[in-house]
Length: 193
Image (cartoon, rainbow, N blue to C red; front, side, top):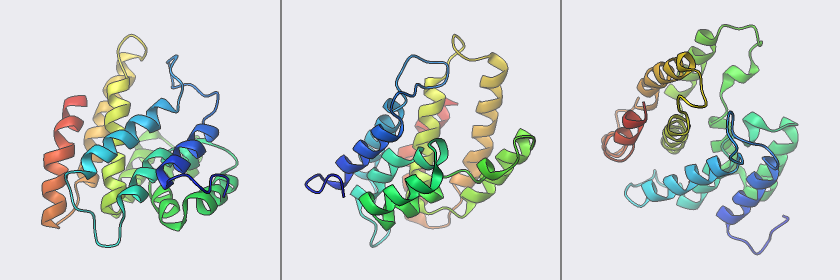
């Protein structure tokens, strides 16, 4: 453990900052780490209003929000799995793995529609905490895009994909989850689309 005296969320911020060091957001002058910071902050705010399943701790979910793109965007994959496991623990790693889009494992030549379908199917079975983080992540991505820095065709495609992903993210028949997702996450998500 590189930071034995830090809280879990602080450790997660350090790890994500190291993993994304020197990387900028696509079509932006903003350092990439600002995105996980916003996702973690929004996750922390949402968690003030909802109840997580028994045994799931808020700091675990917030730590996973910081680390949500590490496995997807940083290489080598195995190195970061070990780092998350050793520094943030098995529960954070489990969430980070749930937030990994399985389409990343498909051939680059796989059509985008197939990739997004694979990802949507993956999120049908994701845990409630993973779906919370993913909705916040997607909302932040949508809010970060604009016609000055992205092609309008791509913006329309990403918004359409976001609408399709939404049905998977809202897939639950647990009343408390339905209320939480619709009250605290859906309005911002739809506003961003």
